[in-house]
Amino acid sequence: MRPFFRRLAPLLALAAAGAACDFQPDPAAGPAPLPGTRTVSVRIEYRQPSNCANLDRSNCVDPVFFLASWMHPGQHEEVVLTNTPGSYVWSGTATGVPVNWPPTDQPHYVRVYDPHLKNTPTGGLTGARLTIGGQALTQYDRPGTPNEAALVYVDDDGVGHNPM
Image (cartoon, rainbow, N blue to C red):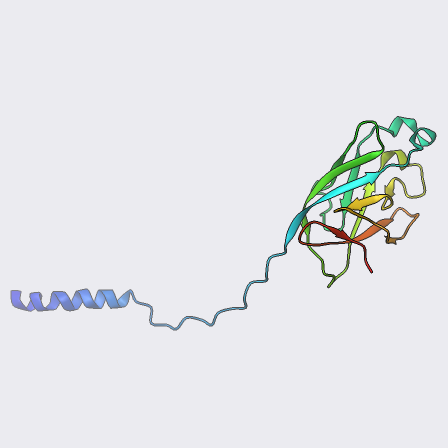
């Protein structure tokens, strides 16, 4: 009987190994993943109107906030700008800005909340006097309203471009 088990042992080992193999064909590959969105950091500059003292002096030193269409509401993505001492210039850097140049889609909508302009028709929100990635912005959407915003495209080097 022993010779029988000796011959049977390799067959049992082979059968056990074969049971662990997957003989089903693999499914077809799905679609390729979407390419990742390219993002850059962009320098922001905002020139506050020099008549702060004439509007509401108490808000002249309150921080200015930068807001943009790529930011998600409620996730604290706004950029707090820093005042250059002795000037009306506020600046900062936005990170994670989606590249959208050359233009194939809508431009980004950008603006600031300037608390010393809160008693104006825009409620403190403005796209005026903004420089994004070294480009002074000249195209606006809904100027003079609480929805005012400047329009900009951003390239791979973090340089801003006005819509054409």
